[in-house]
Length: 380
Image (cartoon, rainbow, N blue to C red):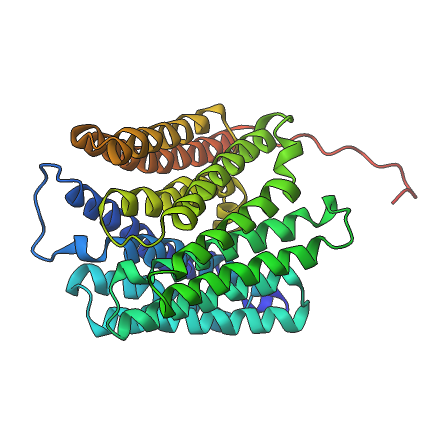
């Protein structure tokens, strides 16, 4: 069945996108509360679900929505609907059974989407993305079983890293030349999955293996991603490459912290590791892929502009200050204000994206269409 006949209109995708936006805003607000900023606290302790809101309610819903659009089947929209609704339930009722179950349902349906996509065109890149969906399922399963959010972080890491690495492999195929590239990719993916499994089974030693797996994936990305070449280009390709390579740097830092120092479920090292992955790596990926992914979802262009470098620079600079002076040096006031700047960077990017999209829409309506050239008779 074709996308045009199976996939409903764009307006059907908007509720899921709206729930992702709510999860993002609630997660950022929870982050400000955790930083100790003087803002009003809501009745529900939303800071308890800061991580799941950001990773599953926001990022998970975006991933599921993009994959549903790629499949082009109406039932596939249930995946982002469940994860988005799960995020709303977490905001309204806290970390209860309903919100966790809805997030888990989103991962199960996403696995069904990947199964359908596999029937169309199997491949290593798709296998990696399906591994990410399985890791999402494993994280919610552990959360339902009574594990803390901090104890599910290894699986949440596999979710985002495997998903993004699979997408990068999919995009990099045209530049791959070495015959064993995909075999190496499968090896590092297996190492990442084994590290998360070991962390759950042996919490004291497993994080060292997880860190090694994260470093292996980062090394593969650094060597084979086309960003190494496109960083010398201009405009959008260079912007994307700068964001990708910066994100890989943060992912490498998280791998070093896990591999070298071992387990951490609270404190400065936990803060540095978690935010290196989910802010430095994941948010950087979202920033630079948005001009490609959002138009595919909304059918509304997000044109490149140099202004997009501003929130990207604020994100990486403030995170560097947060980790280097706040977490490593223990300067609490710097840590707090750098965290606020992290939030400002995310909100700033959202504002830039909306402004650029609306500006493009106005200019396209006011610019007259070019005259259609006359074609000579008999020429097709």
